Amino acid sequence: MGIDAGFDMVPRLSKGVVDKHNWDQFISSIKQHYRDDPQVETKPNYILFKAGERPKLPFEGHKFLRFSSKVSGAKAAATRAQSYIDTVTRVARVHFGSRVQCWNDGADRYGTYDWGEVNESIESYEQPESHTSIASFLTGSDPIKELGIPVFEIKTIPGKGRGLIARFNISKGTRILCEEPLITTRPMPPSELELFLAARLKALPRVSQRQYLSLHNNYPGKYPFANTFKTNALPCGAGSIVGGVYPTICLINHSCIPNSHNSWDSNAKHETIYAIRPIKAGEEITIPYDKGGTSATRLAFLKEAFGFDCTCRGCSRPPSDLQASDARRLRIQSLDDAIGDPYRMQSRPRQSLRDCRSLLQALEEEYDGCAGALGARLYYDAFQVSIAHGDQARAGVFAERAYRARVVCEGEGSPETQRARALARRPADHNSFGLCSMKWKSTRGMVPEGLDTAQFERWLFRE
Ligand SMILES: C[S@@+](CC[C@H](N)C(=O)[O-])C[C@H]1O[C@@H](n2cnc3c(N)ncnc32)[C@H](O)[C@@H]1O
Image (cartoon, rainbow, N blue to C red; front, top):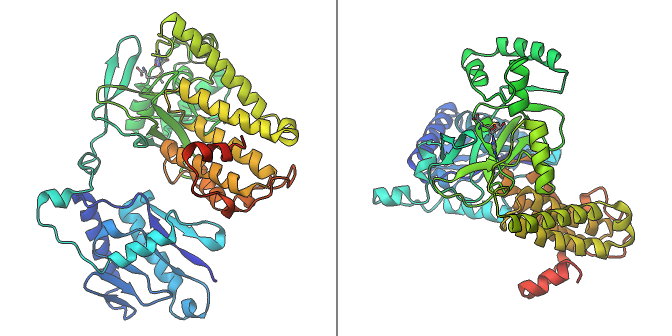
């Protein structure tokens, strides 16, 4: 036992030129820092730290997943393992920023990778690969990402002003953008907000001031700063009353059937945009500003809250398609309400799970098979129904699915993704474990094997 601590590189480095260069610089800094330390030894393929559990840093960065050791116990104390972990983490952060994800299981923060894959990666340090050609040198890399070229360009879109257009094909789960807000604030009366924003803007660097002033304002006239905020602000977290305005993210237009998801990372204090379906080169990148409902509800909301008439592809469908979509939206709403009813979850959980399955199907139909965060939320609901009746086996599978859906929408590092991941590993840690009953009691290991997909889904949803 004992406490493990360290950091993971997320996502892992590619074999490409930029990652390789950054890793070489990092390794040089480490060698330089420890040049007179007898506990740090340079081996042919890696640097060995003779402290704690003797962690290593390979010379080939793409093999690296984790640097860690036990930091408690006599051996760790005698060899100052904690100090090596801290220093190497600090230097890695300088070179790789938020890609360096620190964890400490004593503080209930766990690494991203499984120990199996970490051990495999460490074993591979011993077998250096030789690069024989430029092609093999670039294998596995993403030259676009490596060169830092944005995957979109800003263009004028008929009827919508500016918008973001995909420059290349973008695959599902790609992080398109990550930005810190120029300004955040709570709601205030317009005159008060105007004064508040004027003061905040004055304190910003000139480039940020220009970015703010270049944003679209749907309500010209009185209160220009406040109305620019109203036109562009995105909530800092689902349901938050605090809104934030961003230089580029605020150029993304709305769609009722979006291809991207925006989310606020409450730890990192930034907003991210991820592709929730494959986006073709030339296609517009869109996010949802609405709160769901039928086309009439959405149109009214968008007009009231943002002052525009939506012309997205969802709203521009032929009347018969729009009618079918409205029927699905109503069904989605009523299933969602039913699943959220705690009395029903307690007294008729089997029915709640059946509703989850129906909701999943309705979401897939309405959102062209990519329900994004709505899918993640649905799986979390199914998790709650199962765990509230003591069923760790199904709850674990639902949490695993919620985790995978979150990775697509928000990436591996977001707090929501991490939460789903922790629940998938230990469903019983949830505070509603057995809250309604233990009539479905099962352990995490009781997931059946050898079923085909249809049989497995029937088992999962208790049909
Ligand atoms: C946050 S801004 C988006 C960027 C904006 N198009 C621009 O030129 O800066 C929101 C504004 O974009 C326009 N817009 C966004 N989505 C739209 C849509 N689906 N249909 C029509 N106009 C839209 C509206 O004028 C809306 O008030």
